[in-house]
Image (cartoon, rainbow, N blue to C red; front, side, top):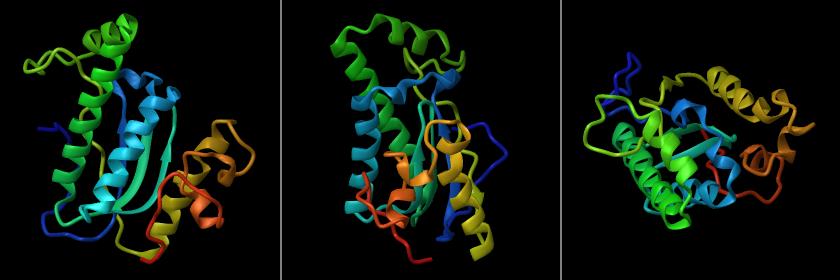
Length: 178
């Protein structure tokens, strides 16, 4: 169970702004195979109609989403659990002892049911109740790679829904109606 003051209200189908970061902010998403695990999982949740995705950006060590679901807490917990297991299994198959040692070293002491920790606890959900807040959070998401100096324009970042909103081919589909 996440130890956070941020909560997703039950039965609330409003979108939430969410952030999920890798443990100790390790740059694990620089690996395209790990990035694909994230995108494949989100696409699965969309196909199964378990998650509505409005905006996203995947950076080297965190992901920002605007999403909604019938039980968003459960879906995000499932997403994080599945992607962590898939990523750890990937590193094990690759024999990547360096990353595995890091995931073990940064594991929180109370996580006694596992050998490794991939994600930081929580997702800091922020409820979006107005179109103005929605646009503010979406702009924050899309400008992230520009602020980091990776690209000049948000739509140039391959791992961002800014491409969807610019009418370009993108990694994931998003719902543009809110």
